[in-house]
Amino acid sequence: MNPFSTLGIRHDIVNAITELGFENPTPIQEQAIPVLLSGSNDFVGLAQTGTGKTAAFGLPLLELLDFEENYPQALILCPTRELCLQITSDINKYSKSMKNVNVVAVYGGANISDQLRQIKRGVQIVVATPGRMLDIINRKAIDFSQVGYVVLDEADEMLNMGFQEDIDIILSTTPEDKKTWLFSATMPTEVRRIAKKYMTDPFELTMGTKNTGNVNIEHEYYVVRARDKYAAFKRIVDFNPEIFGIVFCRTKIETQEIAESLVKDGYNADALHGDLSQQQRDKVMKRYRDRSLQLLIATDVAARGIDVNDVTHVINYSLPDEIENYTHRSGRTGRAGKTGISIAIINSKEQGKIRQIERVIGKQFTKAEIPNGFDVCEKQLFALIHKVHQVEVNEEQIEQYIPRIMDEFKDLDKEQIIKRFASLEFNSFLKYYQNAPDLNAPAHEDRAGDRGDRSFKSSTSAGFTRLFMNLGSVDDFTRGDMLGFICNNTKISGKSIGKIDLKGVFTFFEVENAFVDQVQQGFKSVDYQGRPVRIELAGEREGGERERGGERSGGRERSGGYGGGGGYKGRSGGNREGGSREGGGGFRDFSGKRREDRVGGNSGSGAGRREGGSGERRRRN
Ligand code: AMP
Image (cartoon, rainbow, N blue to C red):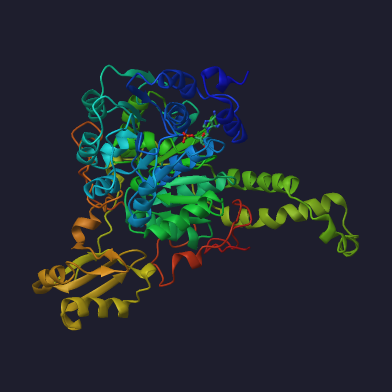
């Protein structure tokens, strides 16, 4: 008998999930499904993303609801649009062969009329992000009076994003006697509190230790000097030619800059952060899912709900402000039973934070050494050899050239040919890595001598104030356009505007001190292509351009963070490490071209990406 049938799942659903490749239940499914199928318990499941929790609650819902009736019977609340769409799509797949199952995805940033129309037509399962759900409730467009089940998925994330109040209001429209099922990757006191508030005597299931990271994930850290961080990061990537990774930064600025620098250095990377429009984000995510992108550089908020299997590495380019975010970050790898590596690149002063994370996740990090140039060359060489083995030969097309190729090679024996093919790649790596410095921070490093995160504030001209605007070159602005845009909206003469520092998704510009208020007033309710224009004093942004909120701006920041007096959290500094020794030049100004145009297609692996020596490395293909 199929193990899912043994758990109580009926045949047509079992067939559908078998087609999805679900042969055996994951541990959480095995333990949660029988409990939830009884329909008589509140439930708290402590489980990471990627453990199969969508099916753990989705399959029981399909068994428990009455699909002859067409009114909302189950409400699933989750933190992000991506997760909302994922859950909706998963439930639709599980119920492929069932009749009259209507699931609606309700999330912000999309046309509300379509969602209202679907609700009006009749649905049994509503999957929603809290902001948009509340909007629809306020329009009196949905009746939750007969909801029997509420699922709070990634409850810790929803609280993180400041949705507590919205959830309270939404749940107040559902019946008292409904069952509530809460899933969370971590169990901070806030989640404990809502579990208490919304549930009576819940059945509790903990997969692994509380707040523990996935057992399939190995944790490593590298200690480097702050100024070598970018070079060390690239070397780690080069040492892992098959990497398919997510790289976490703390700020939108850092995210954008790292992505831009990587692209310039010939890597297949792009950024995902909250200053991109939804359309831009969807595009980046599609490329990543399709594996046309090898490295996704993301902020914590933007990466929430990302459900991509087979992520090989999570790289903490900067450690998160809050320890729990480390669990969320690393949980993007090691999904669905696969193994994964979570890497932190730190400076010597941050080793204490690693110890704190270890305590929270209940797992030890391994201290790893940044590989030397020779190790990287060797790794790349064998990755190439591996690729030669794996390559699909188009017999039909290549056949016609074989006689000529053989003729060209007739003066070389097999060994010489192999040497030459291998050298095509190997030479450029050897050249690039010759004299490559040791990037590991010396153990005896004077800690005070390592300046750590350096601020990247530029000096502001006397009499001027530097302001931040959330539009930049990706919005098709040139410096001239930007000057015009500022002057038109604020009615300030161009003479009173100083330096304009146009970046990818934002701009810093100077304005005479006397006109700061006028600029802020001028842009107060200005939209640009549907996005509100934000102006802030640059000092605030450069001091740690944190990203907040998800669906809506200004989500509350969580208290907490690393223990030990908050020195870390409150620290200023946008964390821009200086230029790299390798790759020539490190960070650069962004050009006016749209990012999408600059990033090439699938480079597949690290091999074949770069030419040239110590200078710039260019994509060859
Ligand atoms: P989730 O934690 O629900 O996001 O699931 C993570 C991934 O595991 C998804 O890609 C699911 O399709 C997959 N998955 C869930 N349950 C199983 C199962 N029993 N067998 C194989 N894959 C699964």
